Image (cartoon, rainbow over all chains, first blue to last red):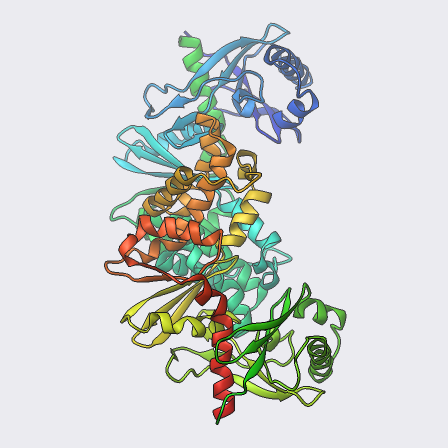
Length: 316
Length: 316
């Protein structure tokens, strides 16, 4: 069957909500609406409702938001993120790995919104020890960039970074790292905060950052964390340098498992993550093994993944 | 020269202050006084004073506290901990490693308090990347227990755990781990806290703890941290189990570097650390390589170390 000419992309996370009207073939964005309120706030507003009541409430909320999107017409909506979790629109089971990219077998369900609009709700993915919701759709949209390689790791840095193992046409495993969250906890709440100052502008201290990366690669994060404080006590180091030294320690520790001969790493990140992760990867896997997605490919990744799932819905 | 029959032990940390009147030969404690206010509070009360003013102020404070200790007479006082830091009584340079145990070359300085009482102020120790103040005196007091061994590691667990490398009669290097602080940050402030419940009583879940230790040994802390949350989402794990699983992850990660053939580990800890660290060490180095200090030896460690420094003062 033919794909519709347009679809509405819904990125419904824990703490944010974004709708975009998209031209299906070139993924051009014709209209956009962002609300700083995700499923969590809506769930907390009615914590005692049954799952059926919550689905009605969130489906009505979604239909109303779409009505306010110029040009939404009767186009279908494709929904990814925490909307399929136990605090979202409808809880769906996780898809299990491997995720074959030729025939993407993500879990999804067809719904009809109160305005009779067709909707596709995409579920998350699990493996034995980990879960994700949202990143799997983005990864699916980036799959084209990995197609020419036998194996590698796709990195999606962030507050909770994801490493997806790619092997002969499929994502086979993944790991979540709390790197960004640990950085915030340590700089705001730990003893180390006394030795750290966040730079006021966009100042970047590459040398201190790389020093942190090398320290983590050599000895691991936990054996070197206190060094941040000791640098201040022993050599009166610049607190801004320490900010980047700690960032290097955390990112270096996250990436050290990638230090394998011939490991290919695919990095999908906007700034500031792109600069930091690329620099750290240069230390760990070397320039020749790093592949960065272009900005347009990265921007379109979620939409491309949603289009793939829209096709699965239309054909299946 | 002969040691005095008694001395006053002063353990002056960042957030606490403890005086004990001690019989020198058997380290019997004849009187004790504890104040929940360390150098930090005293420093913050007069942040703008010069170092000479601060020394006068803290020396007077110390002399007054000693006057309130029954039987203090004219016995000398030996002071260890943060009192020798830049917010303490007098800032002393750090001693550098190796610390030979036959002739302990800790840095110390003789002072005279306002009541004309002789005082010995013990400094901290540094190596290239780390610092400690207080633990070095405790380690010195434990040195007798290591004397029969060629090499090993002395563990002093706590909010900031210390690992001291011991080799043929000397401490040669050490590393600080923020294990206890990280545990508090993660259970109180991170996303993981949703999956964790601190047990109300003294309940201990050895199996979940050991599972955490093994996970850290196999893959490292950061690759398995999110597992705490995933366990809840995927298998509705008991939040109390998760409390101990996280504790196992953190302690297992701290100790994994000890996994070397024939590594001898000397553990000096009270409860709850003794149980946790011993169990983790059983997984990592095996029962035959773990040496735990007896409770009396552990209790007397700081006093024994201070007595050694008192002897250095009397003879030096």
